Amino acid sequence: MKKTIISFLLLFLAISIHLKSQPQWKFHVAFEDGIGAKDTIWFIWDTTATLYGLDAALGEEPVSLDYSVFNVWTYNGVNTTYDTLKTVALPYTDSFENSIDAINYELPITITWDSALLNADWLPPTPVGWINYARIDNNYFFFYNNNGLAHQYDMTLSDSVTAPYDGNTDPWAWQDWVHFPMGIYLVQDPTVFVDDYIYEPKTILSLYPNPFKINTSIEFYLENKSYVELSIFDFRGIKIRSLINQTLNVGNHRIKWNGLDQAGKPCKPAPYFVYLNVNGTPIHSIKLIKY
Image (cartoon, rainbow, N blue to C red):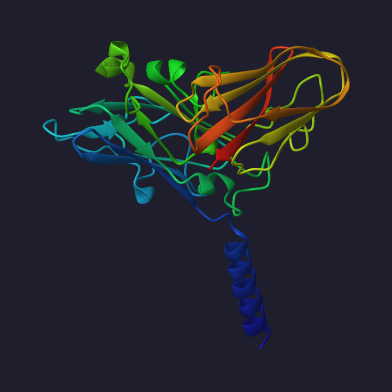
């Protein structure tokens, strides 16, 4: 009887530990080239994953490439001797900082992902609780992006991007080497928005109404007299309007945007991004919808 009770308790303990274990986080970045060829890179956080070596049980193993078709691949972030990976698996304590290469592609390249997974409620609560730094970085996105302050494409603000964007007439943007290799970074960074100003990023910048049709008000608070840059970018990362570029006093500030660009022409219904830069430091950004 005593052995039965002990066995039951051990079984209950094992089940409890299993139920409390961190669920796997699986995130894909899909690529489609200009003629419809597709390929995908997978990023996995798993409690069983290792930092060194390959986790074949999670799909992290070298693949043989067909060099006659479109392929994307990456490398093990720690041991680059393992190449041609399409899956990268890491323990939750580490970040993804991977270089993506490609062969046999036709521009433009459309990249898609599920930004909702960056805020998955099963992500560990520490150090941040969500992926607050998700970026695509290459030569192209240095100039054409949705984050003109960082010169990278911010994946937290959308679910896809096409490069070059439709209608881009810059010959440089249509050269293959401009797009690959491409860096993808998925990080829980506790230092984001943390600096000497001790700003509250959730309250420093707000918009109303959002979405808006004609006018919207942008509000923010300054704890110190500061030099402020407040700008509007379109979904391609091109600045279309500079609302403030001057020193402002301490206190609440409200700026109205009438949906016009620098030339005074009405902007098309589309997503836009409001960026606040204080004393040369990027402080906050918000997605804004005009309908």
